[in-house]
Image 1 (cartoon, rainbow, N blue to C red):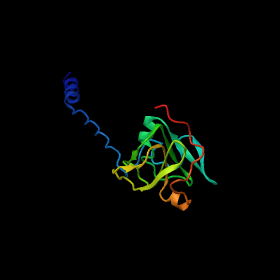
Image 2: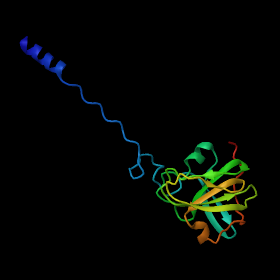
Image 3: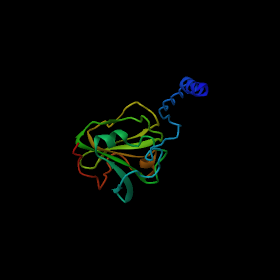
Length: 166
Protein backbone atom coordinates (compact mmCIF):
# COMPACT_ATOMS: atom_id res chain seq x y z
CA UNK A 1 0.00 0.00 0.00
CA UNK A 2 2.83 2.45 0.76
CA UNK A 3 4.23 1.79 -2.72
CA UNK A 4 0.85 2.72 -4.24
CA UNK A 5 0.74 5.95 -2.21
CA UNK A 6 4.28 6.79 -3.30
CA UNK A 7 3.37 6.29 -6.99
CA UNK A 8 0.20 8.37 -6.62
CA UNK A 9 2.08 11.14 -4.80
CA UNK A 10 4.79 11.18 -7.47
CA UNK A 11 2.24 11.45 -10.29
CA UNK A 12 0.25 14.16 -8.54
CA UNK A 13 3.32 16.29 -7.82
CA UNK A 14 4.91 16.05 -11.28
CA UNK A 15 4.96 19.48 -12.91
CA UNK A 16 2.65 20.00 -15.82
CA UNK A 17 4.39 20.37 -19.16
CA UNK A 18 5.09 23.97 -20.11
CA UNK A 19 2.74 25.36 -22.76
CA UNK A 20 4.24 25.67 -26.21
CA UNK A 21 5.29 29.22 -27.06
CA UNK A 22 3.01 31.12 -29.41
CA UNK A 23 4.34 31.15 -32.96
CA UNK A 24 6.00 34.39 -33.98
CA UNK A 25 4.38 36.33 -36.80
CA UNK A 26 6.15 35.81 -40.12
CA UNK A 27 8.93 38.25 -40.83
CA UNK A 28 9.99 39.19 -44.33
CA UNK A 29 12.87 36.69 -44.15
CA UNK A 30 11.09 33.92 -42.24
CA UNK A 31 9.89 30.82 -44.11
CA UNK A 32 6.17 30.96 -44.73
CA UNK A 33 3.81 28.02 -44.48
CA UNK A 34 1.08 29.32 -46.80
CA UNK A 35 1.80 27.75 -50.22
CA UNK A 36 0.68 30.94 -51.95
CA UNK A 37 3.30 32.93 -50.08
CA UNK A 38 6.83 33.18 -51.35
CA UNK A 39 5.81 32.03 -54.80
CA UNK A 40 7.13 33.27 -58.09
CA UNK A 41 4.63 31.61 -60.40
CA UNK A 42 1.03 32.79 -60.73
CA UNK A 43 -1.19 31.74 -57.84
CA UNK A 44 -4.43 31.93 -59.75
CA UNK A 45 -5.70 31.80 -63.30
CA UNK A 46 -4.10 34.25 -65.70
CA UNK A 47 -5.39 36.11 -68.71
CA UNK A 48 -3.43 37.58 -71.59
CA UNK A 49 -3.22 41.34 -72.02
CA UNK A 50 -1.47 43.20 -74.81
CA UNK A 51 0.05 46.58 -75.47
CA UNK A 52 0.60 46.83 -79.21
CA UNK A 53 2.42 43.62 -80.20
CA UNK A 54 3.57 42.87 -76.61
CA UNK A 55 1.54 40.08 -74.98
CA UNK A 56 1.86 39.31 -71.27
CA UNK A 57 -0.01 37.28 -68.65
CA UNK A 58 -1.66 38.66 -65.52
CA UNK A 59 -3.49 37.28 -62.53
CA UNK A 60 -6.79 39.06 -61.99
CA UNK A 61 -7.50 40.72 -58.63
CA UNK A 62 -11.11 41.85 -58.86
CA UNK A 63 -12.45 41.37 -55.33
CA UNK A 64 -11.63 43.49 -52.29
CA UNK A 65 -9.72 40.58 -50.69
CA UNK A 66 -7.68 39.85 -53.83
CA UNK A 67 -6.85 43.53 -54.32
CA UNK A 68 -5.83 43.89 -50.66
CA UNK A 69 -3.45 40.91 -50.89
CA UNK A 70 -2.07 41.76 -54.32
CA UNK A 71 1.51 40.54 -54.77
CA UNK A 72 2.38 40.56 -51.06
CA UNK A 73 4.87 37.94 -49.84
CA UNK A 74 5.95 36.88 -53.33
CA UNK A 75 9.63 36.25 -53.95
CA UNK A 76 9.43 37.21 -57.61
CA UNK A 77 7.38 37.15 -60.77
CA UNK A 78 7.79 34.89 -63.77
CA UNK A 79 8.95 36.74 -66.89
CA UNK A 80 6.16 38.71 -68.58
CA UNK A 81 3.75 37.92 -65.74
CA UNK A 82 2.04 40.33 -63.36
CA UNK A 83 -1.30 41.23 -61.81
CA UNK A 84 -4.18 43.42 -62.93
CA UNK A 85 -6.27 45.09 -60.24
CA UNK A 86 -9.84 45.62 -61.45
CA UNK A 87 -12.16 48.15 -59.77
CA UNK A 88 -15.89 48.83 -60.13
CA UNK A 89 -15.37 52.48 -61.06
CA UNK A 90 -12.89 54.97 -62.38
CA UNK A 91 -11.34 57.30 -59.80
CA UNK A 92 -7.97 58.29 -58.40
CA UNK A 93 -6.20 55.32 -56.82
CA UNK A 94 -3.23 54.82 -54.54
CA UNK A 95 -0.98 51.79 -54.00
CA UNK A 96 1.66 50.95 -51.42
CA UNK A 97 4.14 48.11 -51.00
CA UNK A 98 3.42 46.86 -47.48
CA UNK A 99 4.63 43.23 -47.19
CA UNK A 100 5.70 43.26 -50.84
CA UNK A 101 9.20 41.84 -51.20
CA UNK A 102 9.91 42.58 -54.84
CA UNK A 103 10.30 45.89 -56.66
CA UNK A 104 7.39 46.52 -59.00
CA UNK A 105 6.34 48.83 -61.80
CA UNK A 106 2.71 49.92 -61.87
CA UNK A 107 0.64 51.29 -64.72
CA UNK A 108 -2.62 53.01 -63.82
CA UNK A 109 -5.17 52.57 -66.60
CA UNK A 110 -8.47 54.35 -67.29
CA UNK A 111 -11.78 52.70 -68.23
CA UNK A 112 -10.89 52.91 -71.95
CA UNK A 113 -7.62 51.03 -71.43
CA UNK A 114 -5.32 54.05 -71.75
CA UNK A 115 -2.32 54.18 -69.40
CA UNK A 116 -2.61 57.41 -67.40
CA UNK A 117 0.48 57.03 -65.18
CA UNK A 118 3.44 54.64 -64.74
CA UNK A 119 5.55 54.49 -61.58
CA UNK A 120 8.23 52.34 -59.98
CA UNK A 121 7.65 51.07 -56.43
CA UNK A 122 10.22 49.82 -53.91
CA UNK A 123 9.80 46.76 -51.65
CA UNK A 124 8.14 47.40 -48.27
CA UNK A 125 7.62 51.12 -49.05
CA UNK A 126 4.47 52.20 -47.21
CA UNK A 127 4.25 55.57 -48.95
CA UNK A 128 1.31 55.82 -51.33
CA UNK A 129 1.96 55.83 -55.06
CA UNK A 130 -0.92 57.85 -56.55
CA UNK A 131 -2.50 57.28 -59.94
CA UNK A 132 -2.44 61.07 -60.52
CA UNK A 133 -5.56 60.70 -62.73
CA UNK A 134 -8.72 58.60 -62.48
CA UNK A 135 -8.09 54.90 -63.13
CA UNK A 136 -10.22 51.75 -63.20
CA UNK A 137 -7.27 49.36 -63.45
CA UNK A 138 -3.74 49.03 -62.15
CA UNK A 139 -1.26 46.63 -63.73
CA UNK A 140 1.76 45.55 -61.69
CA UNK A 141 4.78 43.98 -63.37
CA UNK A 142 8.40 43.45 -62.36
CA UNK A 143 10.33 46.67 -61.84
CA UNK A 144 11.45 48.19 -65.12
CA UNK A 145 9.15 46.04 -67.26
CA UNK A 146 7.19 48.92 -68.85
CA UNK A 147 10.41 50.83 -69.65
CA UNK A 148 12.09 47.71 -71.08
CA UNK A 149 9.07 47.10 -73.30
CA UNK A 150 8.95 50.70 -74.52
CA UNK A 151 5.54 51.25 -72.90
CA UNK A 152 4.62 54.78 -71.87
CA UNK A 153 1.74 56.94 -70.69
CA UNK A 154 -0.91 57.18 -73.41
CA UNK A 155 -0.42 53.60 -74.66
CA UNK A 156 -3.49 51.35 -74.59
CA UNK A 157 -3.84 47.95 -72.95
CA UNK A 158 -6.07 45.47 -74.77
CA UNK A 159 -7.94 42.55 -73.16
CA UNK A 160 -8.74 44.14 -69.80
CA UNK A 161 -11.56 42.41 -67.90
CA UNK A 162 -14.93 44.03 -67.25
CA UNK A 163 -15.31 46.27 -64.22
CA UNK A 164 -15.37 44.52 -60.87
CA UNK A 165 -18.70 44.10 -59.08
CA UNK A 166 -17.18 44.91 -55.70
